[in-house]
Picture (cartoon, rainbow, N blue to C red):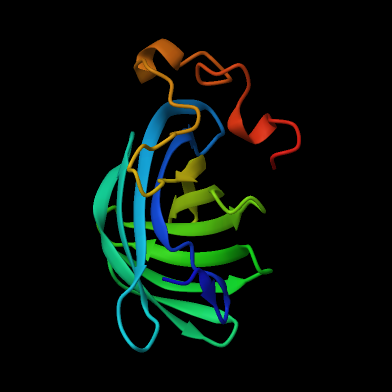
Amino acid sequence: MTDTCEAGFCGIGKWAGTAEVFDGQGRFISNAADQRFARTVDEDGRVRIDLAFIGPLKFAGHYTIKEQGTHRIYEGPANTGSAESVGPNAVDANSYWASTGLSQRFLLVKLPSGDRQLHLSLMSRGEQPLYTIVSESSLVPDDGQANIPGLIPGISYDFAQDPTAGRGEALIHRSGTW
């Protein structure tokens, strides 16, 4: 499978990561787990994404991505919308997640090493921001041994007053990564 799409990278492969979830006012709510499997599924080059996100909001399902020049169309059923390539390693998307009833502004960036992705999601219902999600995922190697970055054991109750969500620093504050 190739990881190159006409409209930027596809992120082909299995990805596993963690996220920090904040409420609409920027207060930490919880850590979360994020898994994605991206693969090319037909001769048209569509990419199928199977995913599961487990945190204060939960959803699982799949959707396909169809390229149209520098844009991508998210065809559902889990996620519908569109994205634009903002370089060879990044996409900016607007979409709707039917299972949650939330709209999403999404920035996904693959780091130059090729084995890490950073995500910033702004989730809203209408004009009301509900969640900000900052996450990092690693490509799961062929041997299946996922090195999930930043996995913090514990429960959200214990981290409710911790501005770094149990880490030495918040994902978005790490020097040089963002």
